[in-house]
Image (cartoon, rainbow, N blue to C red; front, side):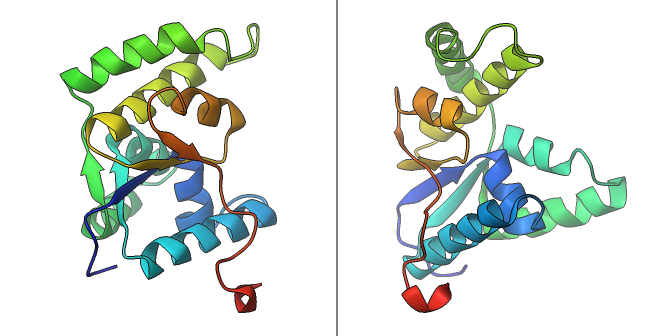
Length: 159
């Protein structure tokens, strides 16, 4: 992923898990792979919000976390959650409460994490935010161009 244009895209936790760790449903892993292939082909820089990196590293051992963090950091921009992000995340949380189902176990925690991830992407200059989550997609569209994973590859020979 060396020579990039200046455009930067951000991805959420599940896209990272499906595309890098190759963990999850086959259709999601395939879509994430198509996305990463298209981003590399188009020389797009990938931003990983620090919250996404944290979620990705959670199930790994300390040694695996160190190795994975170093590898991901060498390939992507890791964007920190700072004051600008906090202000935007709070605004998104107020807006998002109506879109996330109430009474769902961990729903509020998911909303809060999604708000922090989206705010980090926006505050640090991502032009597009990719997610495989419909609620997150709807929320992100309030502040950034947000897209779902591709449902087909750029190149038909990649099927």
